[in-house]
Image (tube, rainbow over all chains, first blue to last red):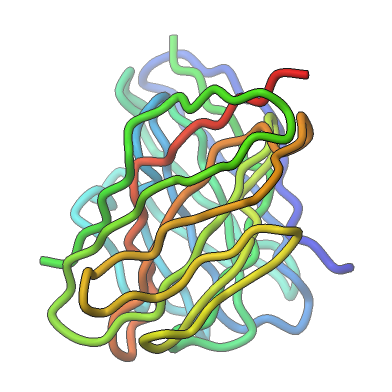
Length: 114
Length: 112
């Protein structure tokens, strides 16, 4: 069964550094998402992406964050200047279409900011 | 706003025990309801769903019924296994949205 893959599985970065989290969505999916899960807390929506542009973003997704689909397969989340509070699991997801359709999630990247 | 409330965990059970994880929601429209499961070290996987009132979603022995009158979508399983140990998330999609609202998750620990 096709799956969403994320790399790396664990990223350790110094505060203030830039980090790029990578995702390969399922190939025939058109909608892509990033979520964040701080340890012990709920899964929080960050951003959705369709047709090469952001379609919706949450208040968490401020100017420090950006997303990109640099080629036909990868979907990346960049954090420009990391803060301690950015430490979390970051999940990528994709869906074939929108509107009440369940999303397929990757296994996540654990980001640790020192 | 829309929200999902799940029972606090962890829920600790012996193998073959009956499981209930409560989920209630508030929503301005008519949501679709989902249960996701997160096994240790993995991402979220869709477990089951129900898209309208009185629908019952079922998968892998788990089931949940969409109860509009009580705004609930409780997850049940008649006989849990050690392999069911995971975190379970209730979620809703409202109207034409494609962004789910998740509950906080309920950790299930099943002992042999």
